[in-house]
Image 1: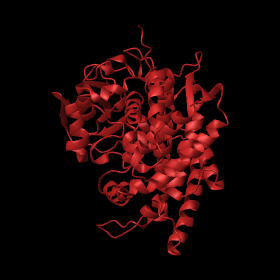
Image 2 (image 1 turned 180 degrees about the horizontal axis):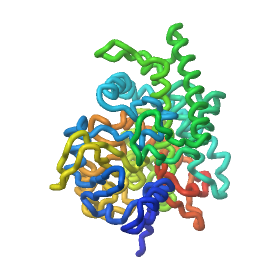
Image 3 (image 1 turned 90 degrees about the vertical axis):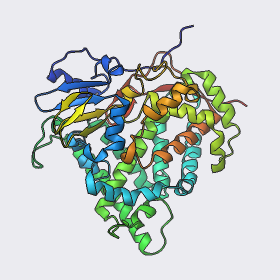
Image 4 (image 1 turned 120 degrees about the vertical axis):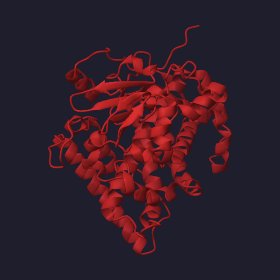
Amino acid sequence: MNVRLPPKPAARPENVSLWRYMRLFRADILSAQPAKLYRAWMAEFRTPFFRSYLVNDPALVKQVLNVRPDDFPKSDRIGAGLRPLLGNSVFLTNGAEWKRQRRIIDPAFEGGRLRDTFPGILGAAQAGVVRMGQRADGTPQEIEAITSHIAADVIFRTLFSIPIEDKIAQEVFHAFRAYQRTQPILNLAAFVRGPAWMPRFFRSETRKTARTIRKLIAQLTQDRLALIAAGQAPDDLATKILTTKDPETGQTFTLEEMVDQVAIFFLAGHETSASALAWALYLLALHPEWQNKLAEEASQFTGAFSDLSQLKHTRDVFRETLRLYPPVPMMVRETVQPEVFRGRPVKTGAQVVLSPWHLHRHTRLWDNPDAFDPARWDTQNGKTCARDAYMPFSAGPRMCSGAGFALIEGVVLLALVVKNFELSCVAERDPVPLAHLTVRAKDGIWLRIKARTP
């Protein structure tokens, strides 16, 4: 029996010119890479401006992310393209500044705080189900637009205690969608390092939407600071972060710093969650046997936080989705001193590319790496790779603060959708993965949605 594999982008030819590579990379960072990366432990790329080393060797990945993270700070070549929106957020900083930001942010996502965010996640999921019910007529629907709406609702409810129907929330949501369409992952700064005054050649629409988003976030933050001062602020993520003092300096975030952090919370939390949920729903439409298994499991879900542990199959499906379609497909670090990678000398200033996309599909590590198989997580191979070759949220000290939040969110959203709806593929519209800020589909993911019958 032929098993239909989930789609992945075609690889580029082995040898292409720098100009051709830049054009491919600007359009999609996944199809700009050669096929050898799915089996190589390391690959070197040379340009007139810098050397780049893509690393798949689990031992070397561990060195970079877990053992010696301070020796491999984030590279600004990619980050420079996001500064109009993200400013000096935790996503872009390094060293002492990054550590200070994490000391303030991390407590909001620790321990019992995840339980405190659960009502907001559940409320957004329930509201999303109601909206989906209005479109569940069996006609083709673009699912990414639907999941983007739900994920944005989660962010607003858990961060600022407002639903997406709020006027400012709507304005932020639409501005972020405009920003995503105008912001390529690559601009001049990614290839040519220069001083701060060097033009970055951002599109005018990119700068405009970034200013609009930051102005709206500043308004939300200023309003929250006023509520905190009056003792009337809700106990949500924004209040927790704004009132947390750095244990070493005793200082809290300024208004400008909080705008930076909220921008990355929205970009990371909304974009990545929308991407993961859309791909999960597509994979379930492609595999109705798993969809039915999840629907049966979800039928027993009462909506209580304590019931999350019972959604094992749902959790495995979401983990498998993050393996096949990691929302952030590549991360770039930089060497600050000479290194030796797998016997090869690496100079200071070299780029170290860590690719969850390739590591999660590596042919020497995973059994049947391109297949959708949620049951793999109970196998010895799955357990080994989960430890050594799985990093949808990065790893080590720079692992995403919201990883636990994202897993709860993904499981809840997935459970409520399949509990209420049957999903099927649109034969003539297979999605084509591509990556800009996150892994999305070239022309969207189209599914048919029908109300699930008891």
